[in-house]
Length: 228
Picture (spheres, rainbow, N blue to C red):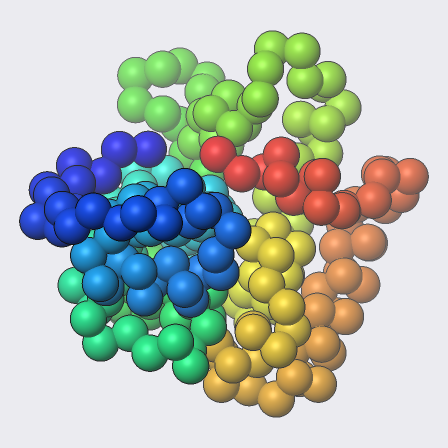
């Protein structure tokens, strides 16, 4: 995914860093400090690490691929603009997902739910195609992905859409974006036991919705395949 505006901002930070080859060994927090000090490669690595999970979180919050692209770019723009005030005491993932979540909430507040685009709505003049179809095609890793897996992902997306918002949010952050319960609790400003309880209820509901796929487990590999 190209971030033209971000690239123009990054162009203002051209200070060389002799330690650049070792950047991939640094934590997210250390990369933010490097970026704030002028190392643009550090920020590029953060984008590489987190744009997929962040995009999935935003997409499953707003359910509109074009809007998800826009909010993802805005998330990284706000990270760029706030780099100088970033404190290493704040975990980068908690900080980034809080920014993304707030953008999703702000957008939802400004637009009536009645105008929210459904994944099942038709795609323009493309007869019979839906936004759900586009999402599956966009995220499919190759033409060889088996039909059963695509059907499972379609059913999972539908089941997630039917979950209560608080449960869906926790499930996405935990199973798709890979955050720890403690990070989710910090992000949502909620006790960790409550977060675990929401996750438990979400899993119970999903098991019922996906009973036909009882032999399939949703693990790290499955989550990674849901990334763009």
